[in-house]
Picture 1 (cartoon, rainbow, N blue to C red):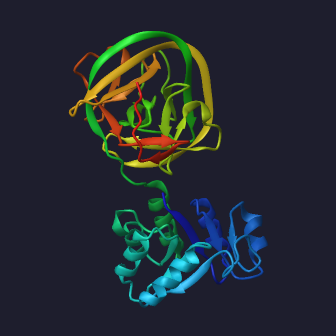
Picture 2 (cartoon, one colour):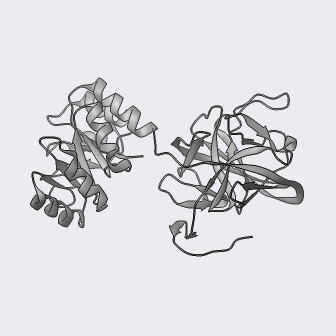
Picture 3 (spheres, rainbow, N blue to C red):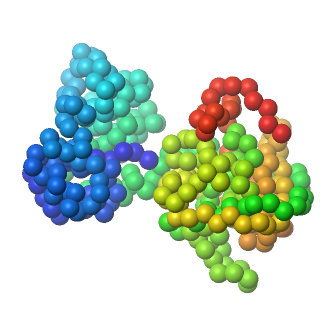
Length: 331
């Protein structure tokens, strides 16, 4: 999910309100208006009297050639750089993205915002929306703040399902309603995670809770939007978690609360086409489901060896949640 800043110059209360309601990460206004923004909501303000001061915390550079790219890289070592490319040439952006510079590109239309967000597949660090049209601003915020990157998923065949006793399991209640085929990535190893379906389906015993993922035992990993992993037990209200659907599309959900309770547990094991073993531990209950390749939900109590479900795999290991290139054996 991209960092989205909104420029409101000259001052326009309605446009600032639209930015806040759409989830903007910061608002850029002329000097003397920072307190007016703060009166409308809690959001960082970019202004001479704001939280981020231009040419001190945030820099602005117009890129016309390689010399300007060097200036951007030097300033990006200090703080984010708002970049203008007057002819909307993509090559300078590609060069800067490839160097992992904290670049915020100005965009006046939804198409420009899409282009900046997709440069070299990863996109720029952020987008500065510079439009006086509230409808355009809403459209950009709605698309860039609700969508995320894609994560690669693979099919795995169930090899084992067995009871493994009692333990502390975690329900993650989010501030987002999830639909069919959506849930969170959870597993015993950060490098091999099952897609666990949200409780969005009706059943005879309990009402649907589409905001909830009954995610697994306290030790299990899940992914966060910044690419890190966290133990389920580490999550708390206000944290962000990654939501994934069966096609690998990702979005972001805010954690509202955790419910940790002692429940009977199941070990679920599967194997990928290249022979990798994937395991997780889930509550032994009909309402806990994994996701099949077609997006349908598969209750853990009805799984059989050979059933195929979706998993996410990666190479290497994790150190305090960060991905590292290291040989690690987990069993």
